[in-house]
Length: 128
Figure 1 (cartoon, rainbow, N blue to C red):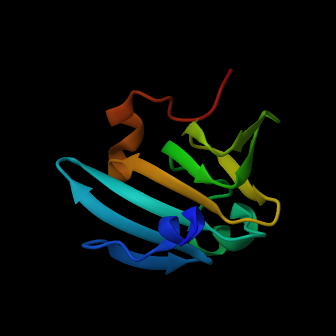
Figure 2 (figure 1 turned 90 degrees about the vertical axis):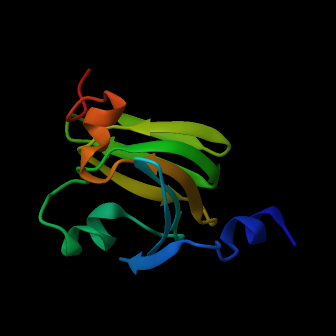
């Protein structure tokens, strides 16, 4: 079994959901959630997720570990962040994200549902 196969294997006790082509496996742990999020090849937030939400940009903070793949983040102010596995990520709200290349992006994420920004002490939106 390859490393990617292991990352994509079913997770015991996880709540599995799919939205906009993204696969999310979530397990509650104490006051937070640990999530494995698989973004498919060709994914772009503004194309795949925006139709399902009521915002122009992703307004959720993402903190965790990019275990596989590469992602590109663009913010409203023109700032760009690039992440390539293996790498820790901290992405503030207010971004459009894209999977780069021919491999899915797999993120192990820690969040507090709608309270992630405050709980982790992050800014409410990206700024310099």
